Amino acid sequence: MHAIVVGAGISGLSTAWALAKRGHRVTLLERDAIPNPLGASGDHHRIIRRAYRIAMHGYTVRMTEAFATWDELWADLGAEHIARVGFMGIVTAPGDNADQYRDSLRTGGYPFETLTKTAALARFPYFNPEGFHDVFVSQEGGALLCLRIATDMVRWLRDNGVAVREHTVVTDIDTAAASVTLSSGERLSADVVVVTAGAWVTGLLPDLTGRLASKRTYVVYLEPPAEFRAAWELTPVIPGIGGDIGGYILPPVAGTDLKFGAGATRVDWTADTPFELAADAGTRLRDMFAPLFRRMGDYSIKRERKCVYTFTHDERFFGIRRGATWIVSACSGHGYKFGAAIGRRVADAVESGDEQTLTAWLEARD
Image (cartoon, rainbow, N blue to C red; front, side, top):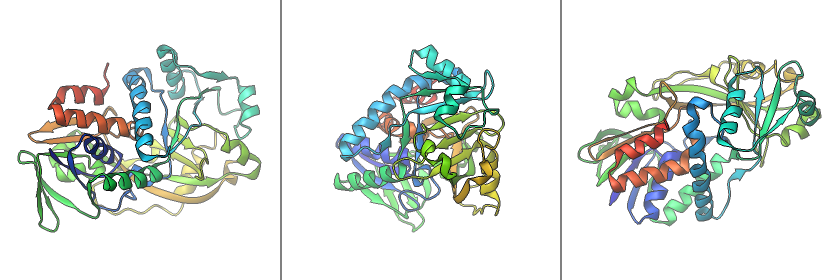
């Protein structure tokens, strides 16, 4: 079988990897460089963690497969691009996001350790004691090193016969005929097309606009005060910070910098619309976290990074089949950690034709 994969984010790279491992011919098309500088793969690190709110517990269960598939990928790449630092939930009030994450772990029987405020302050002295209730720590998970993953995956794909074409813009997809037209006018045909185009998908398939929304946001990289540097280097990744910001933090591990991000910075975006950040964007994002951390104003801003994503209304992943074409959008701000497993699941569907099983796995409503 010949498959054309449109979009070389982690889902596209992983789909190409899974199909190539099974002996299929694969052409991978990416509109920009790989990794795309606006995509998740273009960042230094992304969170991998098991915990979700109870309402999303299906994803908690699916993380077992996700962890196993990353291990399969590491074996193929000959390197592990993960910092296994675990994750930490900061509970600011009973019932907030982090508290719901803890409930989900408890429900599933997954181990974690709860730290009292006193114990947390001793281990992580950067905390503002008035800013949180307690914290919990899981040894499972950590930080996926995206840039290194993308670089090594492209090398593996090329070494294993995949035609990888960067700076190749798809302008039209014939879903029935399994063909794509490029901005150059060239037309490519295959037995199947897989669309993993991320925030550009609705530009290719405009009728999906009601189901998929492209968003832009940014993160800020910080240098902490010297007295807190050692503690941050020993900090797990921090997802699901509650309140109004929807915050998350990745520590400075494996040669990366301390990164802060927040769902509150997310706004609508139309594909290929240029955008610049305000001069004070980094400061405003940093200061959203001031209630949680001491001396927040003394964290110096190293740089900001722009990024774009696709979201569904309920933050579940999306997948459909149209004729000879499969469209997959596994993002909503939490999809990267499933990337390798998604690629393998898409390859299963392409071979079997089973749309229902793929959709059920992606939506995780069980």
